[in-house]
Image (cartoon, rainbow, N blue to C red):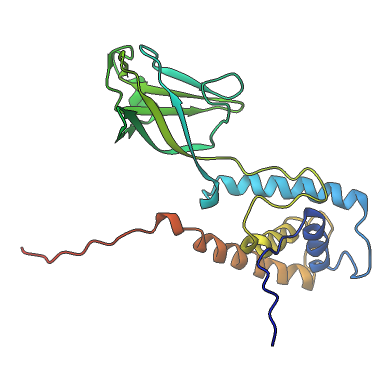
Length: 233
C-alpha cells in the first residue's frame, strides 16, 4: 500500500468557509460558494481568530526580537518609526546583553513600574514593563541604561494574521483546521437561522471538543524537565 509522502496539507479560507456552511446544511456539495457568503465568512473567521489570541494560543507565534538600548533612555516605542517596528501582542520573556553575556530581566506590572520613585535612575537595567496599546506599544526598562547601554533581547507573541482573500492560508498549523471549521460553523448558526436544527446541534457538540484537542496540544514549548528529589524531612 502506497502512501502520499506528503505532509503539506493546507486549506484556503474559501474552502474552510464552504466546509463550515456544508456542516450547517446551508451549502450543498456541488453548490459554489456565493460571493457574499465568502466575504461574510472571511469577516467572521478573522474575528474568531483574533478572539482566540486572547486565550493565549499559538506556540508558533512566539518570535525573538532585539534592539539596542540607549544611555539614559528608559522608554522605547514599538511600531512604525519606533525602536522595534512590530507591535508584540505580549512580551513573555526578556534579557539584557552586555559584553556577550545574557542576563534575564524581571517583568513588572503597570502598578509596580509606575510606583518606582525615580524612573530616570541610571544603572544596569534589570526590570521591564511592556505597555501594549491599540496601535503601538511602549517598553519601559529600569534602571534607565547607563553609558554601557546594551541590547534588549525578548521573546514575544506576534499577532495572528488576518484573512483578507479567498486564497489566504491560515496563520495556524494544519492541526487546527478542523477546529477552525467546526467553530466557524458554530459562529454562523444564528447568522443563517439554523438554531435548533440537527446540524446545529452536532456542530455545537463538536466545536468545543475540536478546540480543546488542539488547545491542549499547543503546549509543547511549556514542557520542560521535571526535577524530583526525596523529602528528607
